Figure 1 (tube, rainbow, N blue to C red):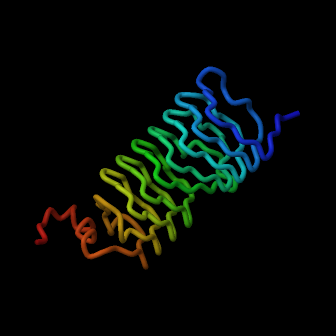
Figure 2 (figure 1 turned 120 degrees about the vertical axis):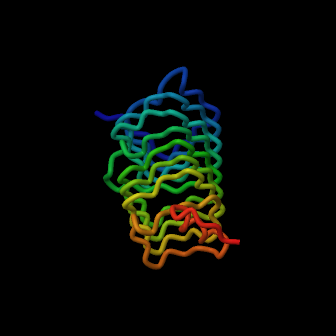
Figure 3 (figure 1 turned 90 degrees about the horizontal axis):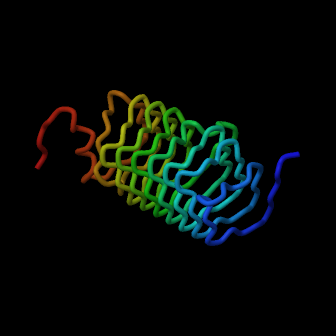
Length: 189
């Protein structure tokens, strides 16, 4: 029988010493926990929250994130494209996700608030109505994405090729709309 944990708070746990037990975690909260370089393969998180955690370089093969919120987390180099697709839904606030990959993920209405998404791969993502509020996307790759109604108005370091993405109704500020012209190597001033 699979391990099942419900409505539990894990605080200041160091899972680098002993991996989180495989199973299902529902309505759980992880506060100030260290998961760096650990294996979360085939673990399912439903309606969970991670606060002030280090999840850098975690293995995510088949991991289920269903309505999971991350706040103030360090999440460098994660391969979200290896997560289970079924009901995949995440949101991020004040997180560092540099060098991570969301290749081909469905991220409809996903919120990235005050995050660092430097060098993140969003190739082939559906980011319909996603919100990149006060987020740094320097060097992020947006190719063959659905960016319909996505909100980039307060995004920093924007560089997106409109010819390689579906962008109807996407929102930009006057300051960052210049990032749609980078490939033409023109100066606006």
